[in-house]
Image (tube, rainbow, N blue to C red; front, side, top):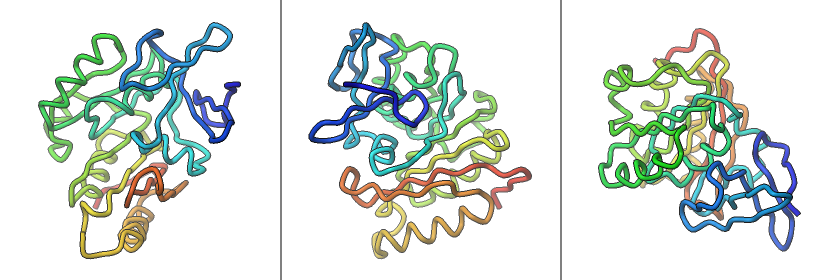
Length: 229
């Protein structure tokens, strides 16, 4: 039986393992081969934690991902749209996702997704070049970043300063090996947390094993008068 979870617009079921779902914004269509399930004339999409770091953080116990119905979301590192599609389900028809990626190949796949999901605006751009993004993005309620670059924290903070509303949520998926292969992941996560706490309220922190190797998720709130440096 699928039932409402404690997280806005996310559903769950219990069996041999806990499964989470979002209500399908485009009934009848799966995005990445995920299982579709129907109950009481509502269609749900199973959210695969091995393919989505937000799903992994939920299954690791995050009590709130900060994304709600009707929100405007800036998604940095959208790839072909696996997690974007579930965020699309959550924010619904009146919400909007600015989906940014630098790779033309994955952007092509994302554009095909946008033909069916009208609440996604695909943007081919470098998340590090905020001057270009300023011309195409409004202020947002939530910022999510999944960018596997050495300076991923710097990119995150710059975009928060420019685009995230005060008290808005900011989610950062950290890939330790992209920052420094010589350090242990836990050390990198600790260093990132210390830097985030200088200007953000870190509401939650989860390491994502076994779903995502050497990754963690930070869920933060933007404080008033935040500055990236």
